Length: 326
Image (cartoon, rainbow, N blue to C red):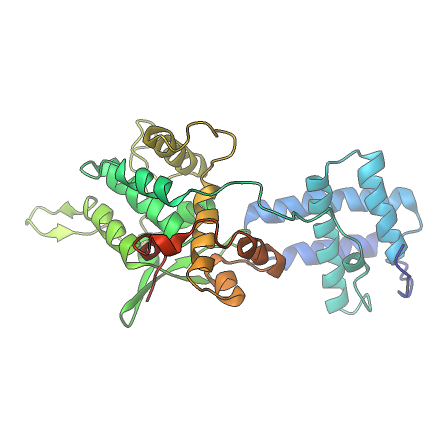
């Protein structure tokens, strides 16, 4: 056990509930789903706080709570990590408002961190095969080509793709970038540079959504329109869902043949994973990789450097253009 150097802080249940509610109310930039996850996680902590009767925000108290999650509640590591993150952030809020001197939950790990990625990447030949297999003479083909190139070129996740609006494309000099709503966020506060190949594919797709008014004028879709729309019978013209993006990518992986033999390993996330390795092999620093991929934890970025050289992209400099923004 880590030496406990934290001064005990005894709170009444009413005080804890007030701090919890104020903390949740402060999460104005978080998505409703994220706030809901924290609220549910902290509900378990409040129940433990009442039953335990001796929680005074010391390291040993937090360790006792973690043991409760693992042994009494029999939670898996991923769930424990979520519940511990919620407590850690509540404690940090209480530090900021002067209730606690230090955050005891920072001393207690939620669950073991991954030492390597659990999803694979596409090889250079598979990237080429996947892109070549998309029939871009159709509207759906144009959409999927743009979508996949953004996931490869900008390391976009399915969540980011679904939140994009047409007005999120911005120009800065000769460079283009996207405003992206990152994981757990409710606002678009990330600027992601867009490679020229991905930008061209995006414009080709968006041209299919232009309309003509009664006077014969060509009208582009409004800035608030979704970047990617569904073409299924049930949701024609509506914003693509996360499930829709996943199904579109998985279909392309399957139809191109690159999915064969490793169904359990190759996923839409593999495109983002591939983008990260391409960036590393193209000379990106750790800081540059973290910024371009919206990674906030440095060890996560370092996992991509462990894969450096596996794509051998120095042999196919043409494919490096997928992620090049220079």
